[in-house]
Length: 483
Image (tube, rainbow, N blue to C red; front, side, top):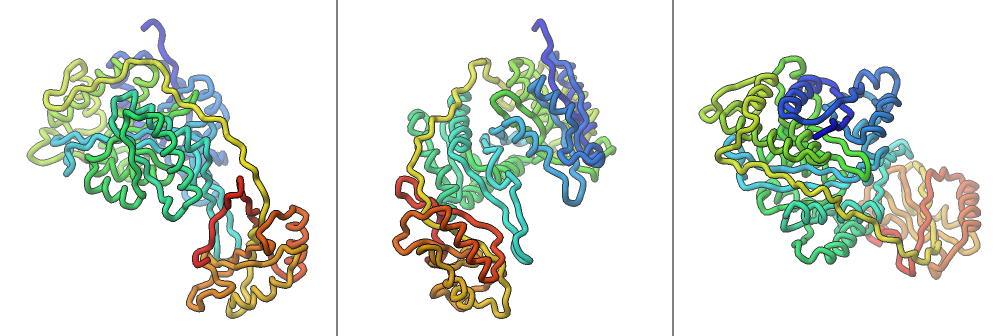
């Protein structure tokens, strides 16, 4: 290799500097062709009053290098601090979070020695958009946003990944039996894209039973693609059942920029003790080397790392009496890996990474425009009169009539409470009041404005509205529980 690849490096907080120092020492010894632009991120930046945890020059570094090797950071306690990971992922369009979870039995203790799965998690949308509001004294909301392009992009990435790396099956996990529109979109998109890959098996699991199966029979999975929150949870479950969350590396991939890291946190309880396992960040760095076109170096490091595990040189978190031969700290573990560079594991399968630099064919199909019609409005009100009787609220709101736009139902936390609600239903001070015309035909924004004026004149505090639309005649909103 004639020139070095410049990457952005952040040493992070807690054990971050210790494991980053160890990781970079191994990369250098293995002959990785890299040069570093070191930036400061995390706790000290937050405490300067920068809510993102990254100074502007850090963003400029990433824009230039397009590769980020990041150690764990600490987000200070209290409100007002944004997640640096979420900020980086969304700012640079890192839509795919790739987390391999493989067993290294018997050298890493696990009940599932045959496990070798990859979780591909959508990385920009879902509840991680962080759009939250306090609306009443009792009720807070967090908006879950799922888009067709975002779903298509991550699902196509999962199938392309399976194709590139010789994987046999892709499993989709959602909760579309409950969230029929949002999760339903993801599942429907999965089924559509799966048809383009007839040589790859596909199936779908509801996320709760899917998570249980990862914990009980992880070896039955190959590639899993799922939404942001679910992916965050199940990737930790999978990493733990294969041996240790501390071993897991992670890639966050976008069209231009990619970030590589360990999946664990900054572990402030062991900071400065020199006992942290650098394997998670090292495995993230191995993924980085493959990504930037240095797969031979990645193989060299991965094989030396596995040989170190086989030889029983273990940090305290994975040390096993009777199997481990020596308990070591961070630096000594890194030195043991360096000593074994050029060696292959004797019982584990040697690493062999893809040498094909052809980019995966990830694209978003043109959207077919549907006929969108406004057919109603949900008006959310803050109402806390004594007794919280939905009948009283309903009778008052029935006085509002904007040219035929009238109250049709009231829900509380999604449960229908008016008309004909169950008297046993518990009610908070947060009410969704649905207004439509008698035929559920189209309405106008002028009617909505007039309705809100009347609701206000009746003495109600409306805190939010959601317009109700149909798309090509198909209802674009959920029905209430009990409706």
